[in-house]
Image 1 (cartoon, rainbow, N blue to C red):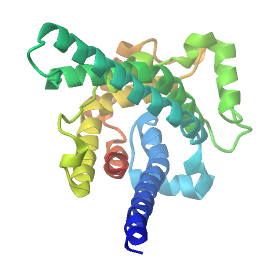
Image 2: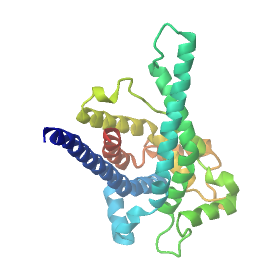
Image 3: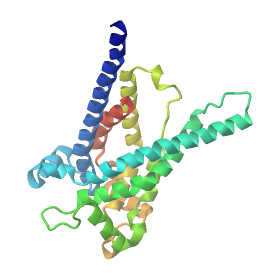
Image 4: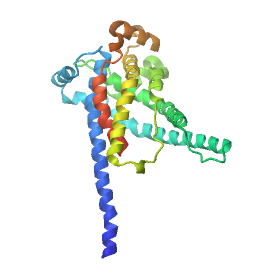
Length: 275
């Protein structure tokens, strides 16, 4: 009887942990979906008020509008996370092997710089998938409402971009995506050394700091990925997008949509770190 009771305790504990993980992940996902559309609209429409933008979307386009473009990230997030973790692990092993070969007398641990390099390498690998995924999402989120619709879903959007600009068109804004993705930080202590609340708090704060620093890049990426093709194209390259944004909005123009981005970053990053 005692042995059966002991065996049931881990099962209950795992069940509770799974419920907490699912709840945290769901909260982060809801926050990301509801807020992301507002962020992108503010970035591509040269600012405005977040609450007013959200109210207008709800009133004119309905609550389902907040889910525009969400299918593509849902389909691609598994692949992106797999690439991110596997590539980070691979880069980390390569660096540890290098340390072992050059300093056999020391344990092959990574320095903070080496952790950053492993994370940056993972970011480069992940951007190959995340760039097109975000591009399609942004086009679906910014297409005009109340018309026949330029794109009838993600696959139609992908097909039309390739037909208009071939494969390179899918990777519009990739240079900016790459610059944003390479910034990565990995704590050098084991996860077990921290309580869950500290992991969630540190994750949330890290997400806030990351978005604050990388937001100008995200603004330029959104502008380029929502730009037209051919004669309708406003931005020739990254430098042109930066220049035009600076001319029309100054420093403030590089931070359009920052409020929703920071509001989203805390629960998303906290939930991701805690799960």
